[in-house]
Image (cartoon, rainbow, N blue to C red):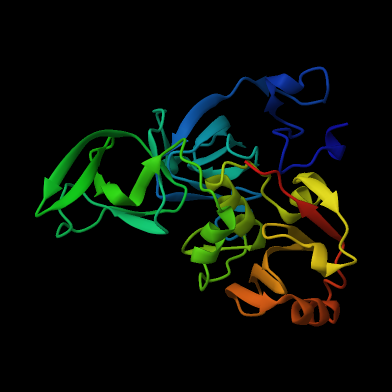
Length: 290
């Protein structure tokens, strides 16, 4: 049975599996797992414990992850709480859990060792990263949020974790020009499905990570025969690709053609993609209104 389970979504291996799967699959050992928090700016998640393997996705600072194994070589295997993604990552990027109070709303913000922009930054947090704020300081008229790890970020770059954007597509549009990165999930580089997932999360919509998951599960299916019925925020799918309808004849997508997040006339995109291995549109879906 375990062979039929998607490795990206189920913490199940022949030698090790989560306790929840006991009685459902065969494994040499079942473990409960321990919840940690991502403490690095972002954390690459890979299909194998090898740094030369391309990444499947990235976890963002502040997200929770259940760890089922840590190896002497510094690798960990677990499942991300945000979207249920399973994979291997560096143990150095995880730490003790602290409930987040805020998330990063700017495309990215520097994390300083104190409340002063003249200090050399300790890191760079991306859109959607979560932080725990315990205080505030002001230096030369600029307000900083003081974080639980002892660092500081500019206060105006944060919003409360429960904040919801009225127009999540507008968040995606802010990422125009961001480089395309296979498996990327930050504002420094992302792929087609991460663009959809990150922006929709800002709008209070939780979505799975990869394009095939989105095509099967996001919102409800709608017809794609007549482009005039499309609404802002509808999702269009090709084999292995997803784009966002931003307006009439306007497709917004992270793509390997421009290697960026870009707007493209929908009619041109349909014609261009049809001539590639991705072929014709396979599905269209409409997300719920929040």
